[in-house]
Image 1 (cartoon, rainbow, N blue to C red):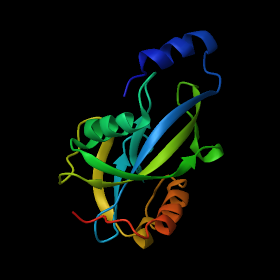
Image 2 (image 1 turned 135 degrees about the vertical axis):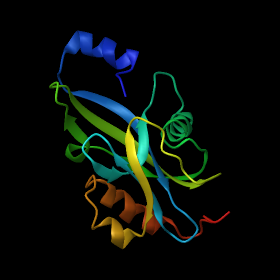
Image 3 (image 1 turned 120 degrees about the horizontal axis):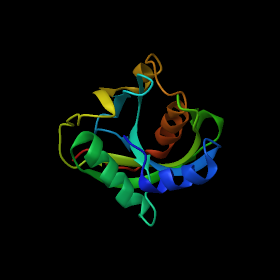
Image 4 (image 1 turned 135 degrees about the horizontal axis):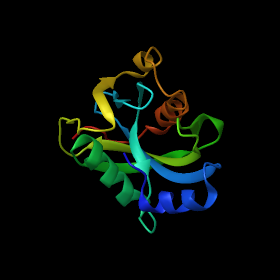
Length: 160
């Protein structure tokens, strides 16, 4: 996905220096307790669906937009898991730009289905049990999110 006008404007001022960007992450779970993961074209690793929050955009609206853009469907947002950032979410891109993401992860369920891969950022999607995720070539920070989500799930109705 190309840089947003907002990020491009900041990059014109600071060059490739570290930029901290807010994001949202959809932790989509089915009624059986499986997680919907996507294989990201950039890095060829499995992770959650999500993305950046645009200026003045509500985080929940950003999450709904990102899931629609990437999977072509809608979700129900149930709760916030937590916020994540730091070294695990810092990346240096091939052009030298350095970005540190701070993302808020939300427990979600599909409002419709099945997911459809939209051309662009993803090459595959699949449902995985937590134990299966540990065997995937994945973004390592998602392990923390899954652990936190698993301890937060009591009382949530995930099935439709």
